[in-house]
Length: 361
Ligand SMILES: [Zn+2]
Image (cartoon, rainbow, N blue to C red):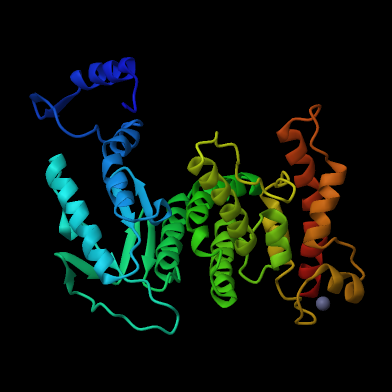
């Protein structure tokens, strides 16, 4: 039985017969492999390697222990004997399919329990495949205890790099646009890492969450001591909750695929309300409440300003609610009108605090 219909095969043949490789001024036709970067290439490769998956299945592997996406294959084995058998099956399939297996790009990663010991020594080989201490599969770096430490270190550097590159732009845009940029450019990188967090230790999850929150605060220009309550109001940041919801959705998708049902389950949307429209000055307002009162040496919090100096300004959280109530997001007001209304209100509060700071000097 063919996976593609006759017409689909003809269409693919027509597409591939027109593909050419250009090297300088020279052109050549290609008659092997799939086009790099083409949207259908992973699916074509999956079709091509299906016989390998079926061969592993026929030799006793559960489908749940074979992960395959295009040319990235991961086979879970319970013993060294099984591992050797899997490598032999893959090599056999490769030679029959005219595919060369690059041993140096492949790796054996031994997953050991928290207090367990290695049975394979690092830098040795199993049937020519090197035993490695970590392996990157579909963009996620797995280590031998599945801690995610290595992946998270790489992720944090990547986020810092993106923030650095966006550095000249960030001070010029409104706070809600910055949050949208974070959601578009950085949140997907975090989502990719969430499976590692679903069953990790609390200490590790909290550590990663703290590091990510620091990155988020730097991205927004908030001082690092900004309360988590404010960060949580701006963005949903509970890694454990996000990981569990992603796991639930993935499991449901997996089961639907396993039983050949239409995949319907989508990832849950953020459980909190969307980020409110906030002007640039909001960041200044939050930060100034973290500066020290020159008179008393304590923080210029709304509570301190009211109780000690008799000045009425809201806390940062109260300010978000107040702005949302007084400048609601409706169709009759444009984004710019709402933002400038909010900016004016924030500037009134800022001038109260700045006057107090000037008077005390
Ligand atoms: Zn004071």
